[in-house]
Image (cartoon, rainbow, N blue to C red):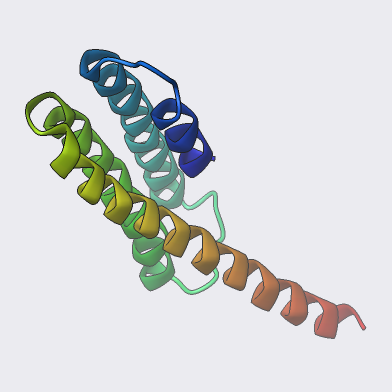
Amino acid sequence: MFVLLIALFVLVPNQDPQSLTVELAIVGGLGVVRIVRRAATFRRGRADPFGGWRYVIRRLGLSGAASVGQIVVAILVMTNPIGAFFWLLAVVLVYLTSAADSAWDLLVEFGRERRRTG
C-alpha cells in the first residue's frame, strides 16, 4: 500500500517540492505509527508471532526502517530533490522486500495449517 501511495504522489504533475515533502512525510509517519501499534500488540502477547521474537523483529524492522527512511527522504526532497529520488528508490525496495517476506511467511504458515488439518 505504501509503495502505491508513493508512486501516486510522485506522479502528480507539476508538483512543488513542498507538497511532495508533506505527502511523503505523512505516509512515512503513518508507517511509523503502524509499526509502533504492531509492536505494542506483540509486546502484550495478543498476537501469535510465528517464529518468536526473531519473527517480530524481522517483520517490524524492515517496515520500520522503510517508514523512517521515507521521512528522511521527505526532508531531503526540500534540499536535494534529485538525490532524494535515489534514496526513495531504496525505500521502495525495502518496502517491497518486506512485502515479499510477509507473503512468504503467509504461504509457509498456510501450508503448515493445511498439513495439520488435512
